[in-house]
Length: 160
Image (tube, rainbow, N blue to C red; front, side):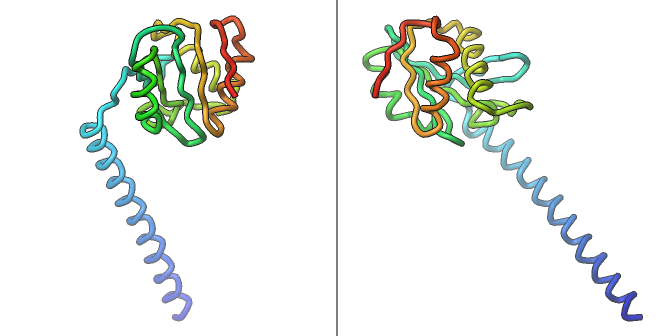
């Protein structure tokens, strides 16, 4: 009898946890849908190998400054910097796969893959060099990797 009661309580707890998980998933889906309508991306959504990436470019001139956010960062973190730089030259911020407005993408999320995706994004968007890459935190690693991986992609400027 005690075992039956313990089993009933265990089943009730598991059912309750599953129900909470389901309610949480539905709530998140509704909130995500609402956010997408309320906060559309300020830039363009560019298809790169079947996945949509967000790229926001403003200003005119050369070189084009590419803003690379830190780990778990997104293009919106650069809004004030982008506004100032756009007064002098062209400047682009973007969201890496799975960040900000960009779709998630399966596979490795290392610096080499991120550099490859950025190159494809810039090419598919019709952006041309020369580029000045600016990154903070992990964004600095990604910018350095990009410059090393694509050394002929434009006249590079190295800044401290």
